Image (tube, helix red, strand yellow):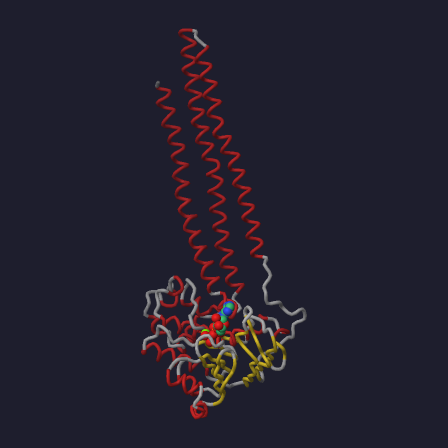
Length: 415
Ligand SMILES: Nc1ncnc2c1ncn2[C@@H]1O[C@H](COP(=O)(O)OP(=O)(O)O)[C@@H](O)[C@H]1O
Ligand SMILES: [Mg+2]
């Protein structure tokens, strides 16, 4: 009896320790898995921004680091788990075995009755061993399942990009002269969403695209950084078809500020420095000042090191927009692509954003989907898109005179 009393607490203690440790590690692993999901979500959701800023490598590194941490946790966890369960049962089995053996000895010693005790003894041992054995085979099945999942991940990772890179890319040395859209048509599926577009943007000019929602403005500006490839016609950059230029080189020339400012769950600093390989604090602060973002950043607890929350949810719409403008200012590209936001900006932050945009557009070639009349009025050329065609073009006053699509849009204030 004493023997039993000693043995049971000891084995209980052993299993308890393993179990507790496992639970703690498992909580860590769960948290890491959550982090991975949110990182994947924001990377996929912000793919356009990632590509536009040539930040693939940066994010790949971030993801690889997290992956490595998760791999370690799970390796540990599974090793322990697969060890602990059979171990627990083994301990149980051993306890029973020792008990029975001990009891058997007593029986044998005092009364010399072997038969029933021995029978039960073997029976119980046999029964107990089945469990751990099953557990082991289940573990090996789990490993196989994991391998299969890994294969599928491999397939996704190795999927080819649908924008083919040129075999012998033309090296470009910057942007010098003009961008030309020539007889360009484009469709996502069967329906043509852009038809016979002809447009030349000279260096230093601002060209505004206006038109109803769904008229093809975003699609047109997405073709320039090669988010999609032109189906008919071509786009020339200083006379070179952009299909012959490596996407990385082309995107290096451009800065994008999009309708939804895409921010990452990271610090202000990292969000602004996102598009450049290495940035100093001074450069980041400088960009933020120009973008009218410095003051509200400094008002946060840790300044530039403050985390902005999941997709920047700790910020207002106008603040997010100014961060993404600071990002473009820091990248300092010769060509600017703006898809202006109207939604979710109050008058005050609208003014701030407007000022920030004006500083950004200074001395640059800009292609802008314009919602604000003030931006449109300053444009060198306004193109009115209607159902995928440029139906009117010219300066603000001339287009008002025409009394056509543009006049209607301005009257309705609906761009
Ligand atoms: N990724 C896409 N796949 C298929 N159709 C799309 C896609 N993006 C836009 N479209 C379609 O292309 C047309 C032009 O859209 P878009 O360029 O977003 O217009 P705008 O920016 O002027 O509002 C719309 O009919 C829209 O439904
Ligand atoms: Mg749009």
